Image (cartoon, rainbow, N blue to C red; front, top):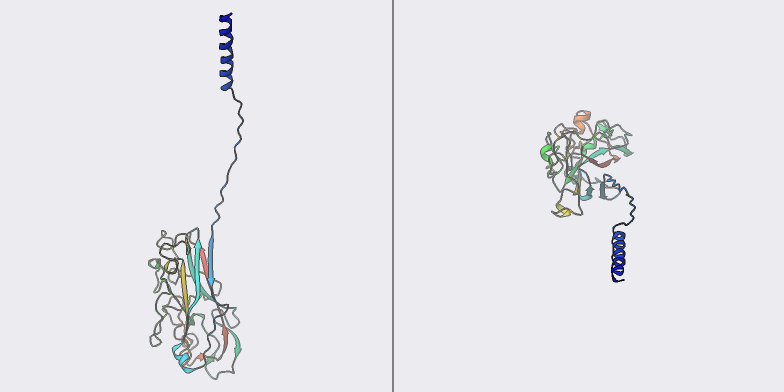
Length: 262
């Protein structure tokens, strides 16, 4: 009887042990897809309209400057470039300010063909990619030139055809530049003014823009230069000797364009 009892216990233990290694299992997989959409975000703080009213001789001669009128903040997940371009609706002609109101005829030599490049820009943070430029001026970081020595260092880039064509390697970019070289030469790496290690106000992702217009005496806009920054585009150069600005109200707009550098 004892022997039979021992065998029965051993058999039960064997059954329990076998069951522990005979678990049933079913398996299903889930595929996880990650879609990384490129993000280019340009935040701009500026008045809806920046007004320049010239109503005394000193302002004509010395010009008017609007400091910090526009603040640009960049966030991007890809390499990027940033540039400005002068535009108008072309109610006078492509590449010129729109005339909204005319004060009289102005007399002999008066013209309403005022070049968009008469507007000057100055950026507080220099373009870190200036080395990629092949023209006279890589960006708008130069101090506004004295009235006595006209220069195209700050004249706004304008596409003569008024179609929005980006600047070339010979023209000004606020950040990044036109080209095909490596990151660090002609593009700014992805990042944000929110996380810039050097501090948002001094980083490649934050720009304060000043504006200046100098009509001059006579009012020929001596600081107006073509896109190359070296060819004068003032009223005498554009319209001939004796030309000067016809009094009136004129408008234009500046487009700031942030684009992926490829």
